[in-house]
Image 1 (cartoon, rainbow, N blue to C red):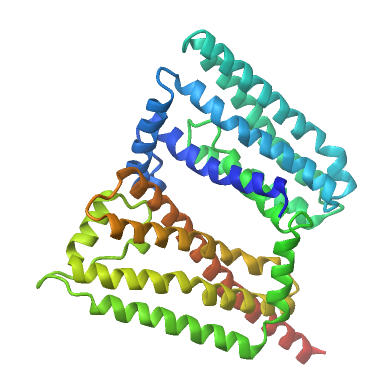
Image 2 (cartoon, rainbow, N blue to C red; image 1 turned 180 degrees about the vertical axis):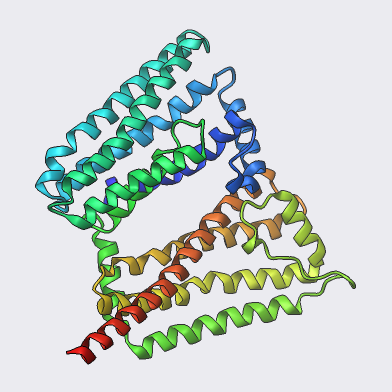
Length: 386
């Protein structure tokens, strides 16, 4: 994985956090879909206000979104250099890249002016100039997709759909002007990770596909059941006060806060927290067989249906975020009852990201099985009619 890919992935994560915080500062609360993130956004906005005292909202987000513009510009250059794109892409991608450079220039100039004028309305006016450039860039992505569909139908459709999704996300987060860049940041990360810019990921995808035998799939399923069953056994063994049910684990509480940690660990008691520790140890192992199981099954499905194998690495996001979450939970157990409020809120966002990859992984699995069943039926009917 080269530097451009790491920058793109980092920018996608940064944009996720920025739209939550910016939405809170603009509207007083995150959008309804992320309503549980209110505590995190409150803590994060207070931290930013303390770290940048006296700075206006336009300065803060002009400052933080400039790296996102830069990452998208780098992603365009990397796509051209990697050889994964068509001539039409090289021809028509000039307009979006120039818009990104203009957004960087306007953001920098507006920030400097806002800083020099001590939070005057001039910087705020520049953020609206940024907004025009951002939405022009989104439309440019859609136009680019339409132009390259004749040469590369899959990539062209991807860009066109990405533009539509970006418009919908921008509408959902209205009036946050930068929100439309979040899906585009994710889209470019996926394109780079699935191409020649990420040889390690490509090798992993190939390895999973080459080793997706029936025997290994059954082994991965058995290991997943064994580990998850052991975790359930430990959870059921957890002693709780009489008349109190076992609380929902923090693993299944997206955007959890310090209150959730105190509630769960408080109900468990000392003995229950010891069980929770060993459950977390097992939970660090669980993503390995689960990701290999989903990836192997999807590899077989993709070979049967004729879709790209690279999707078999998507569930491995679970393997990235789950150990981070569990490591922090073990730290909370060590420092109990002095649980840091800010770290607890940040861990709640990591839980959300982890669960997102879990849901995507199983959606990939069951969606693939459903599509393969349809393909099987059509092929069977076709063979009978011949």
